[in-house]
Image 1: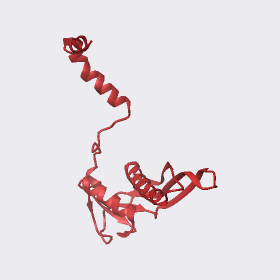
Image 2: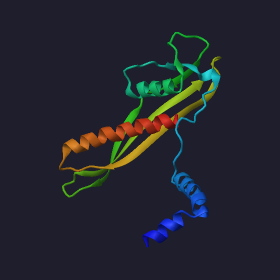
Image 3: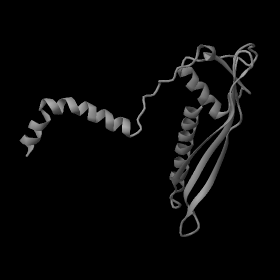
Image 4: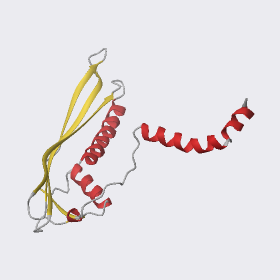
Length: 165
């Protein structure tokens, strides 16, 4: 049986079809290459308002923009593209309760607004609301794992929101 399988895999037709089969499976599952975003030249330098370096989402957005070689200008810069960001809001909704009325399934959501202006202050995009949510299970008997799960879900929500932006 093993020899038959090896001989089938070594046939010329099979060796040509395997990469096609692999790519179709990979693309069919929703895989996309990262880094395929093209930033227009007029958005290569941008300022963020209100600038709040202590706000976690804003720090992550700045890091993501810098990965795409976008320069973050100071708030005082004039005649420059502007990204206005609202403070993000987080919410949790209990989806399922356990035997002792303890939450077992939770939906966490992040929401924020953004508006993008060009160098002359003309509206390019927005105002738009970005909403990301994720469900997760909680073990009511293990509080520490629930807290770490919340941190992981929050990080996933940040990444999803930044990708949508």
